[in-house]
Image (cartoon, rainbow, N blue to C red):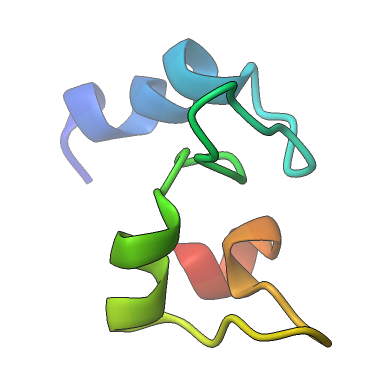
Length: 56
């Protein structure tokens, strides 16, 4: 994995998988809800943006 991608979660969320931004981005990668819905499962029961393994 390129070094730039390895350090991105540190910049975005300090590796906090429960992190939320004031704009609604979530998880270590800080995916927005629309991006998360495109690639991950997000509903009332689960938000895969908060799962570091699935989000990666």
